[in-house]
Amino acid sequence: MRVLGVDPGLTRCGVGVVDVAPDRTATLVDVVVLRSPTDLSIERRLRRIADGLEAVFDEHRPQAVALERVFARSDVSTIMGTAQISGVAMLIAARRELPVALHTPSEVKAAITGYGRADKKQVGTMVARILGLDAMPKPADAADALALAICHAWRTGGVAGEAVRDAASIGRVEADAPGLTPAQRAWIAAERSAAVSGAARRLRE
Amino acid sequence: MRVLGVDPGLTRCGVGVVDVAPDRTATLVDVVVLRSPTDLSIERRLRRIADGLEAVFDEHRPQAVALERVFARSDVSTIMGTAQISGVAMLIAARRELPVALHTPSEVKAAITGYGRADKKQVGTMVARILGLDAMPKPADAADALALAICHAWRTGGVAGEAVRDAASIGRVEADAPGLTPAQRAWIAAERSAAVSGAARRLRE
Image (cartoon, rainbow over all chains, first blue to last red; front, side, top):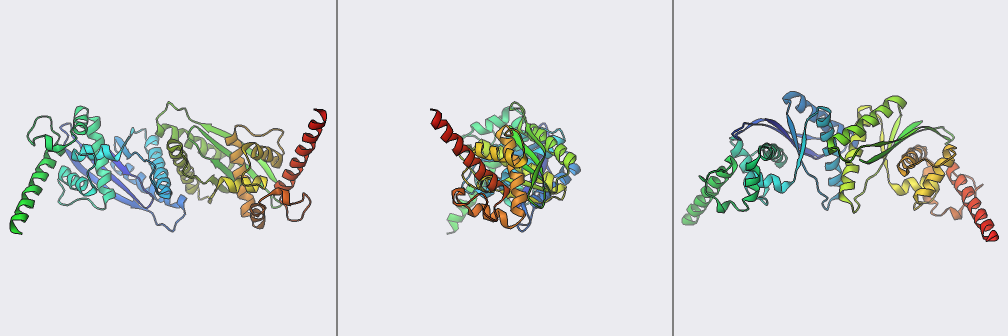
């Protein structure tokens, strides 16, 4: 299943494309951060981002589209740009007859890290680990777009997505427990490795 | 100058097209309220409205586009749909290389009625009067879209738009005062006529 994830934004719009196999293994297809200069008019900025999005759709022909569900936050001008870009991305998907799913940031974090309040670094680290990348995708918009795409494939895969959401704390599960997602296994391993290096650091100090 | 005004919305999207002559006379070209069923997915609703908008653009070939500037209000779900549609409308305009202008509701009310806090009925009445229509365009989304288009033509016409905004109360100006816009003259006449019928009604009672 090829999923295109969009972290919508007018200044930076993260777009990630992943292939996810039935065994939930995820492979990076492409990741790009579309930008539009702040000195352009809003309609030209929207067009710039829309053109970039369509180029990614045309090149990689995703089967599904995942977007971050936008909530009202304190900064009104940011919400508007984000909502406008999300409208444009949904329109592009709808015109290609592609299904669109919205996921909240905490759903994405829970699916990817096993923890709904993970920070950006944890998400980025896990995305790199899941996709077998040497480094965390940067900027955060790129990692978020990939996380959305992976989250969508896993959640629509059925049971496992729910299992991840229900595992409120990864501390409660063992890395070799049955039914764990690759993300959960990798995260637990990463946590242990961090704990080990933390211990080593403390020994040195 | 042919202006297309959009009162953006996911459930009802008002679209009005007017021709405005150099002497500021405005003529109705078309007005339509695009709708999308609430039981469709958001992306299909956006597509439905986008298709309708493009049909109006294709049929009437406007030279400029005016949109209501969206502000954050209490109802988050409404803002999102409104912002998404406004993004889609701006994209459609940008892809046709058309200039897009945003006007706040109070700017529109001031330009059309001479009073920035006019209610919907006052705006609708004035729109009908300005365009020489027998009845107020309905629903309010239709009247608002036409008001936006007229407002845009008048405000970009230069001086007069500012003059209208500065006339905080139409009570301070006379109908035959120099520099008044047709809207202001018509509004003052309407106010007087209403006052007269109010007086007549009171006499009968």
